[in-house]
Image 1 (cartoon, rainbow, N blue to C red):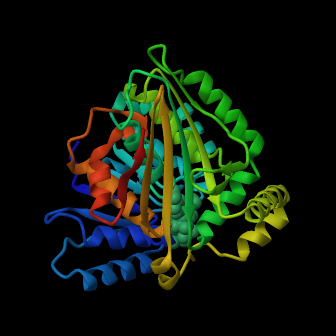
Image 2 (image 1 turned 180 degrees about the vertical axis):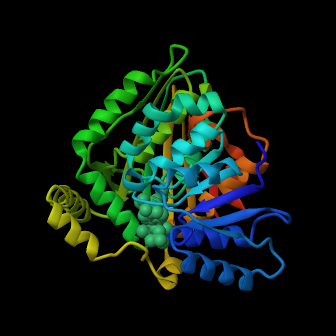
Length: 389
Ligand SMILES: NC(=O)c1ccc[n+]([C@@H]2O[C@H](COP(=O)([O-])OP(=O)(O)OC[C@H]3O[C@@H](n4cnc5c(N)ncnc54)[C@H](OP(=O)(O)O)[C@@H]3O)[C@@H](O)[C@H]2O)c1
């Protein structure tokens, strides 16, 4: 197939799409052919002009007008592209046609999805097609789940790979939330039944190979005396992605168990967070309440430059294998800034780096691993060993 575009960023005019576009504009190698795609020509052209003014002499992106539900237009776009970057959300509403087109055409695909049901449904519907076409379908290339997936890989690399490994990740982050994230979260909260069904069907269709085991283990709220934090279990996309990397990669040992938590400063905050999740879950069940909550933070908006400049994240990992243990840490900038950087760098990594041969739905650790880690380290993300014994 004659592909004249290296990269196409679909959903370029969304909040995180813009952050991704800004990172790419200053980063793509000379000679790169790339495109900004979306449904609003005026907004795309304005964004292109902003990027050209900020990076004179850098490769100028093409503007492509395409709606996320226009299947013929999406098929034409992915046939001419090496790597598609999908920043259109909520993914459960708008994501499938683009991913399906990539799976059919053998086009590599990265996205920002945080909705576990979308990932499971896409595995069931398109993984086999992508394996046959050679397309790499890499979900969750933003704050969810890159620092967690690559941080878990880094922790596991410090431990012997021939013994069962138990790993715990504890995330802390400051900053704000975008309208697109809120809409996706409320949408996912309103679909707990379908989400469980998709997870069950996927589990049956996707066994761990070679007699190994890899499990996401949902913990319970409690205090972590080592970190001095209260832990809120987060059995969502990050836990899924890390345990899936554990299933795919033999270096995670014969029996890999991963639990993911938010780390909170005191029991009152933990109680407040539990109450907030419960209220959010209940509110999301009622359509008008969900729409009202979503309208408070419209799509396209997100934390300001000032809020993002002051924000950061930390993920602590504690891993044990037999008598050995390790405490590792990943730190980095504001979660949305990190999402723009990580999504763009994942696409560049697939396009340019020497990655292991993979196809179908694969995680960041599986598809790119330390090649992506090295790229993120250039942008202020750190991976360190804090202690070991
Ligand atoms: N993994 C992570 O850590 C992470 C981080 C950030 C965001 N996200 C996820 O990424 C998604 C986007 O977030 P965001 O904050 O950037 O949201 P947003 O600002 O609302 O952006 C949504 C994008 O989707 C586009 N879109 C919606 N319907 C479309 C359609 N029918 N045809 C074409 N384009 C359409 C919008 O186009 P217009 O600009 O024309 O409206 C916009 O580009 C959300 O699902 C969010 O949860 C994940």
